[in-house]
Image (cartoon, rainbow, N blue to C red; front, side, top):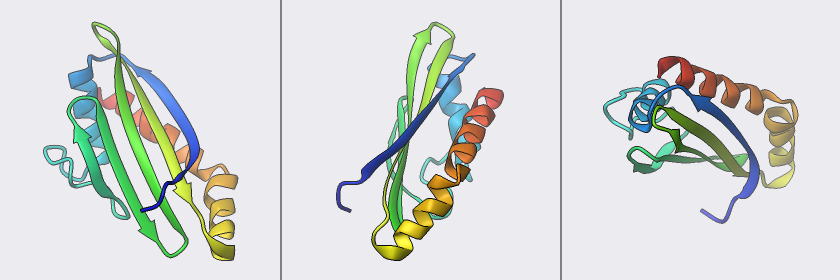
Length: 122
């Protein structure tokens, strides 16, 4: 996969230590929370660095993309969860797809909802 262009980053503080936040991340994102490789359809696991980083990537006709969650300590019982997105959208169909997914604000809504769900699960 070629180098992807940066799209955005969203973050949320979670009232849990990194281990609990990691478990909450897997519970929300993965089909089987005990197995980080069970990422959502459209993605494959690129890296799972317990309890700090979960990286997923994907590709289809209109785009190549990556979504990376990073967890940082903010204190003994608080964690900052970041969701960083990258993607390339080649050709006319890619530009249209980017407008529909990114330009519409849909991507931002979905990522922020994931972060809220992670915080609630922690």
